[in-house]
Length: 202
Length: 202
Image (cartoon, rainbow over all chains, first blue to last red; front, side, top):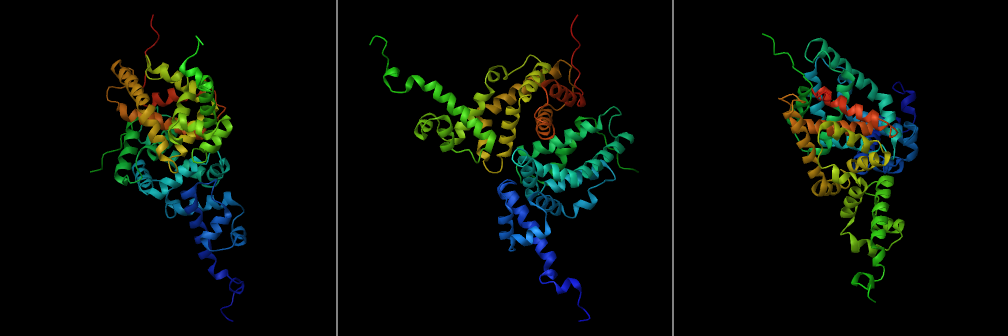
C-alpha cells in the first residue's frame, strides 16, 4: 500500500513505457517496409501486440504517431543534433546517421510520401525538422564567420545543396556504404563551394 | 486489293500507334497517381481501353512498359536533351521540364520506387538515363574548358550536386513553381560552385 501510486493502480500503466516503445518501433518497421501510405494504425497495433485503442490513447492520429516514431528512432542523436561546435562535427554526425540502412530507408520513405501523404513531412518539419534546420544554419554561419567558407557564400542555399546531396546519396549509393565514405562524400560537397576547414591547432 | 498490305490485313493493326499511345499514357497516369508499385498491367490495360494481351504483345513486362512510358512523356525533349551547346541552354531545358507538375511527379515517383521497385530506376538508367548523364557531363566539361567553371571543379561530383539540387527542389518547392524561378534556382546552384557564364558577345 505504501508503494501504491495513482499510476500503479491503473491496470496496464506500469507497462506504459514498454507499450510506447513497442508501438513506436512497429510504426517505423512498417514505414520502412511498406511506406507511410500503407502503414495503418491497425497493422501497427497488431505488430506491437496492443489494441488499436491503446495506440489511440497515446497518439492523436497516424501522422503524429509516425512523426514521434521517426524522431524516437533518431534517438540519442536528437539532443546533440540541434547544434554542433563546427562543421566537421556536424558531418561526423550526419555520416554516422546515414551509415545505417534503416535510417536511409526512413528518409527515403519520408521523401517518398510527398505525393500520397504530404502531411507527414509537413508535420515532421513543424515538430522537429525546423529546429534541426536552424542548428545546421547556425553551424554554417559560424563557419563562414570563422573564414572556413567563402564570405559571399549563400548559407540558405548551401543548406539546400547539402539537403540535395543527401537525397542524391540515398538514391545513388548502396545502403551498405560505410560512414567514412559518406563523410568523404559530404566533405567533397562542401569543398565544391569553397569549404576550407582550419588546420589542426599547434 | 492494290492497297492491301500485310499490316492492313491483320485486324486492329492500323490502330496500333493509337493503342501504343493510349497504353503509354495510361501507364504514366497510374505511375503518377499511385506510384510504380501500385500500377499494374491490368489497371493500365483497363484505363487504356485494351486487353492485357494487347499490352503484353507490345511490352515485355511492367518495368519495360513504365520505362518506355516515362521516356515517351519526355517526348520532344528526348532528342535534343542528349547534348546542349552550353550550360545555359541545358538549364533552360531542365527548367522547362521541371516547370510541369506532371514531370515533377514522375521524377518523385521514380525516386520513390527505390525501395519497392528498384529495378524500375535501374532499367530506366540502362535504357536512357546513362546517355542523358553523358550529355550533361559533356556539357559541363566543355564549360570548364571554356573557363566558365573553375579549373579544379570535379565534374562528376558537380553532376551529383545538380542531381541532388533537383531532388531537393522536387521535395521542397511547390509544383506550381514557374520555369523562370526554377531556372534561377539551378543557376544559383551552379554559381555556388563558381560557374561564371561568358558575357554576351559584342
